[in-house]
Length: 521
Image (cartoon, rainbow, N blue to C red):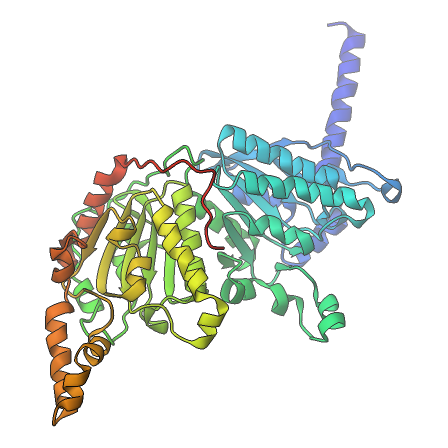
């Protein structure tokens, strides 16, 4: 190679490296220090914690903002967002990490286009999309172009929903229109104390409604984890949030075209679980820890609960059975006696549909008296919300196994995935009961006249309740009619679940042609 050519190439390479260093520096040392002092990692440090070491490949590093009069002379290295791909546990993922040190991570047209580009690549190659959100919102200086940038992202959130997994980590502010992108993704994970989400901030609320509220009280992680249900998981600090994102990915496939990854385990499939006999008391009025039942049954007692502090009367989350990832849905007798209300129905329906979208079998543990009664629930639309749960189970084509641990009454019997609603296998323990209602309520209706005419109504009522229990409060009536496939000994439950899951691995189910269903939203 000629000396002048070599010199020319060296100059171009040096310029390239200089530009790359400038982009990597983000908003500069002072702003990065301020970011760390606030208890947050920088955009690139977050990628280091999320991805396998040395796996990140950056895309769009030299993209610049779209300009405009108000942006003249303003520098925005990397356009305020780092985009590219890497691996998590050896599996490819696409990522974007908003850089709050560059114009507050505000989203302009080219910022949105960078994110849209990696989303398109994720969909074309069949790999998850992970967004690390830390942004002041739309870039006001760009006007409608900034809104168009959000439109580019929102459109793809919807189009790629159910195509590839989408996970949002909220690691700083997320306000105004910016909140709708995470809300359309499959999972939202928030950092306590340093992140928040809301449509209108405290100042606007103060001026309009005169309410005084802080950022944390309005849209902090605890609010969205416990009250609104927007957040699926919350953790202390960026590092723990990113660890949870990695853990979530272990239960999900690369795309809807693939099966979720299996996990090796030394936990024997035939491990007996006699401790379940002491956990679940046969007295239907006595609550018990359903979490302990779940952990006793699953591999290595590992259970990743989703939305653990929201609608606690229903439990949802991921586990493995015989190495196979499964989604678990279970009533929680310790909260509202495990009844289904509006929030529980929404929580369960969303989780069931997520599992179905990504080929994760659903195991349902049932101990439910019915839907929560009350004027407030009826007026708030329990009919519509409860229908979501029925719809989700009926629509799902993944393997579905139901285990009735103690009772399954009324419309909730159907809402918790009965045979009629498409369950592939329904199991029950000897402690189970399936009926329209409990023995006390049923006896009061069926034997009302006999009780009223009795010289000792209380004694007659007690007698009729016991008669009803012997006749109906057991699993064998439903089993005789084919609604229950097998009554299993609790200590053999783990093996039964794993055997049925293995049998259902090749399940295929075709649905009638339709553009899409119309779930009662």
